[in-house]
Image (tube, rainbow, N blue to C red; front, top):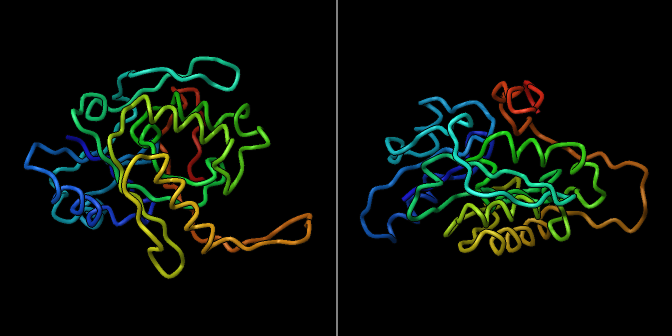
Length: 233
């Protein structure tokens, strides 16, 4: 069994969520994969703070060590490879934790593990200009959002059996949802919208919102995968 958890760029209570899942399952061999995507590896201290007693089960994802499990159709019918870590590809049971929060491209994050456990192929395609320039790729929108759709279909291909996600606000956790990835994201997106969104009756040229520290850590040097090599996003 493999449990994919979030990395230090997400304020997910991974240790609590892993415990909640594993205590309801029979004893078996368990690996915990930290879903870094193209982010830097977590340090030993960060792993212990995030996973507590489960830290000894943890492995940092390496985007250079992946196997192809499927392809999904892109916007123009082109094939987008879905490659994931062997611990994900070969798992007889695949679980995950996650954070459903407003995301500038996916509408809301969370759900599928194809990005966190993947390589630069899917990430490069979904973060490329062809997808990001689509008018339905926008903050807070999951319905008819091509970015979200591609990621969800890639997650279907990976075969995630069960996920336990949370959503948070300034005061802490707003809700938790277990089950299939798409349903979990839809459920927690509604919870987050109700708590975090502000209705606007007029049309504005610009809206300025308060944003905290950057959510992403320095990335791997990913130029070999056809991506730029930003230091921070």
